[in-house]
Image (cartoon, rainbow, N blue to C red; front, side, top):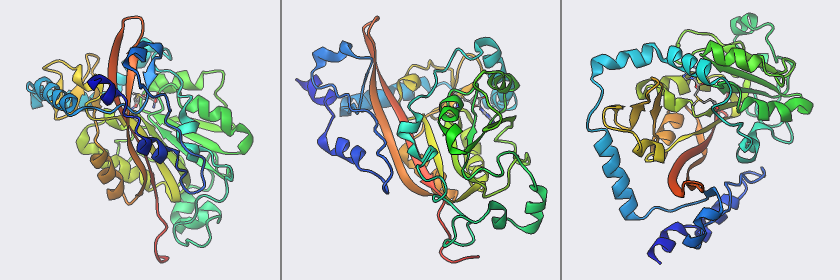
Length: 353
Ligand SMILES: C[S@@+](CC[C@H](N)C(=O)[O-])C[C@H]1O[C@@H](n2cnc3c(N)ncnc32)[C@H](O)[C@@H]1O
C-alpha cells in the first residue's frame, strides 16, 4: 500500500497543470501513463509522473554523496576539457549512428519548434510592435554587411540545434519543416558526427545546414547573424560541458535569438538513475562525472536551470522535472529517471534602444 502511494503520484494537480495550454499553443503532453497498481509495473516500459518518497530522496542524496566522495584530482581534470572534442569524436567513430534513438517526441513536447503560423512568433528586438521586419533590419550596419548572404536567409523561421550529434533530433525536425519553409541549422564539434549526419539519406541541404562548431569557443563565429533565430534547441548537450562554462555558452547562444524566440532545453536532472549508478572515482565535482570513455555529464536542478537562462536575459515559460519510472521488463528491474525540460523566451525590450 505504501509502495502504491508513492508510485501513484499521478496527482490530479500535476496532470491538470500539464494539460494547460500555454498561450494558445498546443499542449505539450508529457505522457499520461500512470502506475496506480504496483502489480502492473512490468506491463509497460515507462511510467509517467513518478513521485519520490522522502526516503527515496534521502537514499539518492546519500548515494550521490558516496559516489562523489572520491573526486578525480584537479590536475587530471584539464584533459577532459581540452580533449572533450576528441572523446566525443571517438565515441561517434565507435558507435556511428547506432547509439541514440531518434527523438520522435520532440515536436509533441516542443510545439514551439514548428508553430502553425511561422511568421508571427518573433521579431526585431529593437521594436516590439513590428515583429515581422526582415531580419537584417535588426542588425548594426557592419553586422548586416558581414552577413550579406547566409544559408537559410530567406526562410521565415530559423532554428538551431546545438550539439546535434548524428542528427537524432535533426531528422524528426527536417521531416516536418520541409513543407513549411523553415530552415534548420545544426552543429556539433565532432567531425565524425557531422560527417555521418550529412551523409544520411534524409539530410537535405535545401532546409538544413550542418556545420562543425564548438559552442564553448568564445571567438568562433556562426553562419548567421545575431538576433536571427526563432528557436535554439539543446538536447542533452549542456550537461556535457564543464559547469563553469555553461553560463557563457547560454549567454552567447541567446544573443542569436530574435526577440520572442525560444531556447528549448532537455537534459539530465539531479539524482537521475545514471547519476546514482556512477562509481567512486568518476566524479569531477559536485554532480559532475566522467564516463569511462572520457565524456562528461552534469545533473541539473530546476533552480540552476532557471538561473542559467534568466541570467542570459531570457524569461521562463516552462521549467519542469520529468520524473519517470523506466522498466526493463526482461530483467525485471526499474529505474527512476529524472529529466529536465525547459522553455525560455527572449523578451522584447520595454522601450526601443
Ligand atoms: C549526449 S550527445 C546528444 C546528441 C543529440 N543532441 C541528441 O539528442 O541525440 C551530446 C552531443 O553534444 C556534442 N557536444 C558536446 N560538447 C560540445 C561543444 N562544446 N560544442 C559542440 N558540440 C558539443 C557532442 O559531440 C555530442 O554529439
